[in-house]
Image 1: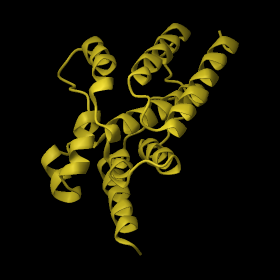
Image 2 (image 1 turned 60 degrees about the vertical axis):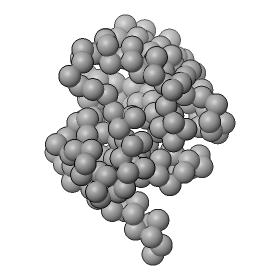
Image 3 (image 1 turned 45 degrees about the horizontal axis):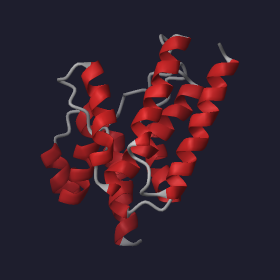
Image 4 (image 1 turned 45 degrees about the vertical axis):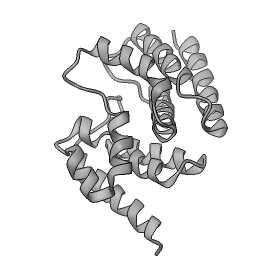
Length: 181
């Protein structure tokens, strides 16, 4: 087994343990780790660098678990920890402020963080179509999809294949919402 493969698997195990017991907001209540695995798979399939793929597995650990940035840096290195830090929202801020910051800060992120955020938004749009949060009405789902598109606008230009995947998924989400009013 190569070092890269071993590191990826170690990150997957780390994420699975960190997110143990957590589920997605959707009606299917799928295990949360499925999301980070999907984000990493999107990144790997679309040619993202190894550090971004590893960060994809770990991207919600600091935001949604008790994992600290220092623990990530120690376990996976400063580069991966830095990418995760760029992709992490400050949960001490109001939701509206966090959302506005994602839009305004997107163009300022590193290339790896842009790819991670774009893969994350793609995964979230897929989830919105397949299993939207139980308590989200149609208007809230529409607002989320529109906001994801605004964030993505500032992330594009690094990885054309990933840009194309997001655009396709975004169009599908819009069509899905239109069909399910």
